Amino acid sequence: MFFVGLKRTLFILIIVFIAFVSLLRYGYVESAAFPDRSAMPILASTELEVVAELALPPGNIAVADNSDVYFTFHPEAKPRINVARLVNGQAQPFPSLAWQPGGAEAMAFNEVLSIRIDNQQRLWALDNGKHGLERVRLLAFDLNQGKLVDRFTFSRAEFALGSHANDFQISKDGRYIIISDASLLAKTPAIIIYDTKLKTARRVLDQHKSVLAGSFEPVVQGIPMTLFGVFTVNPGVDGLVLDANDEYLYYASVSADKLYRVPLAALINQDLSAVELATQVEVVGEKTMTDGMAMDAAGNVYLSDIENSAIVRLNPQGQLETLLKSITLRWPDGFSNGPDNYLYFTASSLHEVLGKSTDYITQQGPYQIYRFKLPNNDLLNENQDNGDL
Image 1 (cartoon, rainbow, N blue to C red):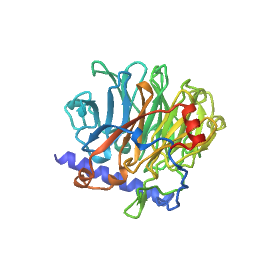
Image 2: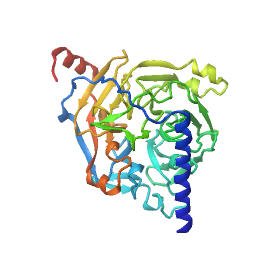
Image 3: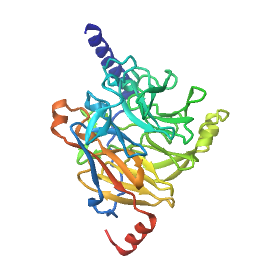
Image 4: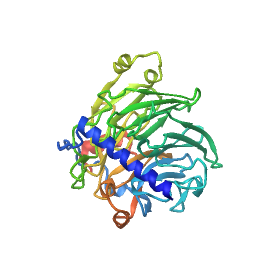
C-alpha cells in the first residue's frame, strides 16, 4: 500500500509539474466565445432512442455488426469497470473483471477511453496510461472469445509524459491504426500512425496548425470549462474518422473552428518529410465545438456540438446541417456507426464530471447512450425545402 500511495503522489507531482511548465510556455486559460453555428434541427428529438441509462458517464462506444454494444466508462469518473459490453441493458465487464484497472490480469487496463472494432472482428482498446504516466498501449481482443490476440506498447517518442492518447481509427484492411494525441497537459498534439504488420509507430503532424487547440473556451450548458480559474479544458487534435474508401483522414481539435483532412496515403508514406506531409493537409469547412465524429458512405461527416447539445453534420458541399438538438444531450461524446444505418453516441456529461467528487458525479446520473437512424440526403433536402422540422 505504501508503494501504491507513493506512486499516486509521484503521479500528482509530475502532472502538476507538466501543468506548471506548460502554463509558463503556452498559457492555460482561454476566454474567447466559440461562434454558434447551430440552427433549427431537421429531425425531431423524438427520433432519439435511449440505448442505455448508466450510473456513471460513458466515454466512447463501438457497435458490432450484430448490434452488440461495447463502451467505456469515462476514466475521469474513476469507474471500477472501465471497458464494458451492454447485456440486457446492463454493463458487463469486457473481456472480464480481471482486465479492469487494478484487476488480477497481468496486463490489466490502466485507463481506456477509446475503443474500436475492426473488420477482422477484433475490439481494440487504447490504454492511454493516465496521460502518459504509464506507457500507452493498444490491446486487441477477439470478439467471439474475449481473448487477447494482439498488443503493442508505444515508446516515449510517440507518447511522452503529459500526452493524451484520445481517439483512433483503423483502416479497412486492419493494417493501420491512426491515433490522436490531444496532449491536454503537455500541449504538443500530434497524430500517431501504428503499422500492425511491421509493429512500428511514428509521430506525424506534430504541433502542425491543424492539430492545435483553438483559442476558445468551451461553455457547456452554461458551465465554462475553466477549472479552478487556472486551467481551460482545451485539448488538441481529438476526434478523427476515415472515409468509406480509406482515402482521407478527417480530424480536428475540440475547439478548432475548422475541420481538416489529409490523404491516408500521405500519412503512411514514410518517405515524405514533415514539410511535404504538411502540404497535403487541407481545410474541409467550418465546424462546431466538437468532440465525437463519424462519417457515412455518402461523405457526410457527423459532429457533436457540445456547446449547443446538438448533433450536426457537414455535407460534402461544406454546409453544416443541425440534425438534432436537445437539452438531454449532455456533452455528446463518442460516436459509432451501427447496423441498419443507426448512429450510436454517448453523452459523457463531462461538464458535470471534470474536477468533481465521486458523490457529485453519481448524483448527476443516470447517464445515457443514444442512437438515431441517419436520414438520407433526399429526405433532408425535402424537409429543408418544405420547412418541415
